[in-house]
Length: 341
Image (cartoon, rainbow, N blue to C red; front, side, top):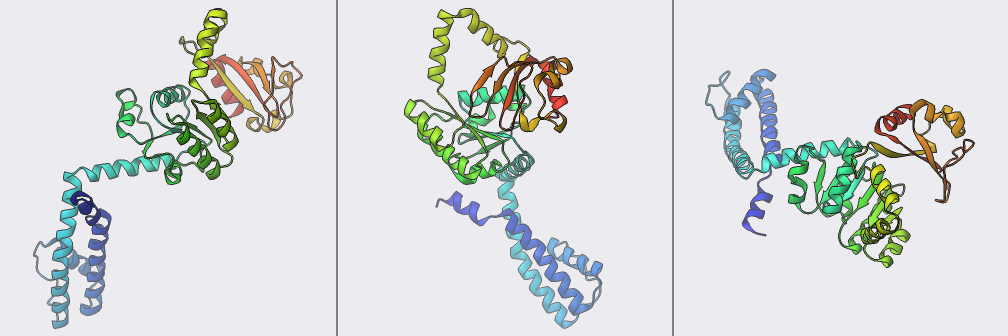
């Protein structure tokens, strides 16, 4: 251990605070017991002794009292010196403000529920964050490189983050994985992504996990490990570029509705468990989502993952199923208001 590491270990701000408070309590109890001081007089004597201001006694001390106070003064010299050294070190090195920031960030993360954990804040992680911010989704970013978490683009957004290795269970637990609704692992190494999928599924079996992968064999392993979806960016990019040649109009329209060209059109998934009780069991016609909000139901996700495109008005949701709807941003917001999500 280097000198800096040793000094950080020895100088503990919490320990120094406990020592000061403990010394005051011992002195207060001692003065009340030995000299019969009132609580306010004992506290005053303890305060002026520890602060070393040098005021006189509240009342003359007995011989036993003088010995007690003398011992406390000698003990207090060491404790105050330690406390001052610790406080000075934390202020000069910036540790105090770093710790305050960490405590503030930890409190923000602890308040989150049903949020998304983004593991890795490279190019893909940043794009994911932009999208979630646009849609008002809560999330926590986990990355080992602190510089990635303080990019000028996100400086004003005050993103909740954790500096750490997402392959470690304790880091995922700090990110609130037990309360999270989903996790996205976008690291550049397939083995790291696979490890995170395994750990996340073990820590929260109900978590929706989306992983990035480079190789097809990695994709199969991640699915077996518990990933809900595995995305291969190179494969999607190749398909997209080829489709621009064979079906340019369709691809351009898809780009438009997915906000790539700054449209206000968006998609939303409406799950059975999100429906208010009065709407559960009703079909599309009876739910009147188009009349109430303006959105259109364009897909019906059945149990097992199969989709029915453009379901008829008699289609209804059952447990484990969901509707895919499309609409403008105001219409999507109206839908969320109706459903209470």
